[in-house]
Length: 208
Length: 80
Image (cartoon, rainbow over all chains, first blue to last red; front, side, top):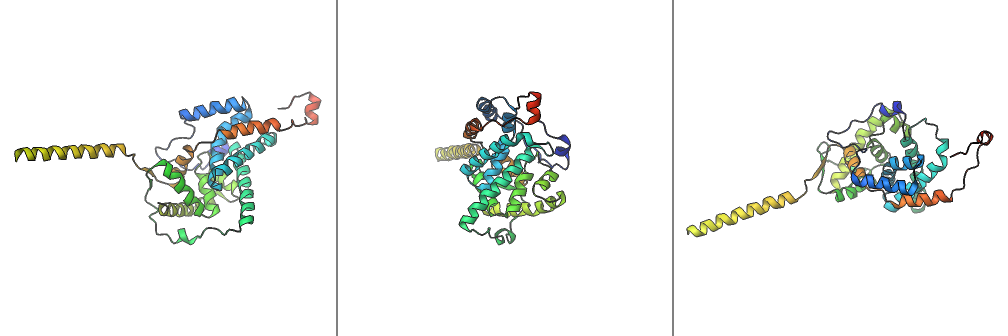
């Protein structure tokens, strides 16, 4: 599944030194791909699912904070994609197109959930007044502890910052693409990203 | 007295070796320079439940075939 090269290359967020590329397949990933081929067969849709399902599931997981809801959302997003694949005009990358479906789907789910529970947003003062050392590296002892702490920190962030961080963390996404998805300029993304990083670091350090 | 000193020294040596072994068993803490780096690591270690692919296969099987557009019917195309 190829993507428009021109869109993918511009203003790419820098990769941290020593950072592994997601495309580097680990053996479990290879087994997972084989399973997908067995289940979904050899098709353009199977290619789409193989390449993007991890990113879509991860975004849904961190936006919805619930593995079961994320599983349902990923299923619904790809089913929608399957039904609308022939309407895809290539004006954006496949990843951007799938992210847009995911973001809208998760927003609808959260909206209906919030309507039922009348919850207010997280207390922004928690991170705004936090005196955390945001320049120091973020440390964690074990990978299994990492997911829980990330979720806690993301849940306490304003929704806009949460989405920005999750999208920018994807190395396939340029600032322009993130801006298009969040309806703002690439410069606005850069500006907000700085504050989002600071807020996340403060909340993450508090979650220890 | 000499024997006692020898024993103490042996005990100290054993304790040092034990501490070194314990330290080697402990995983090194993960360290990330930025939140994005941390999120990428987390995403890479988050497994996609295989049930999604099975559920999709089932749902796609239930999806009725789309009617061909007029131009595809005209050209005798089979669609996807």
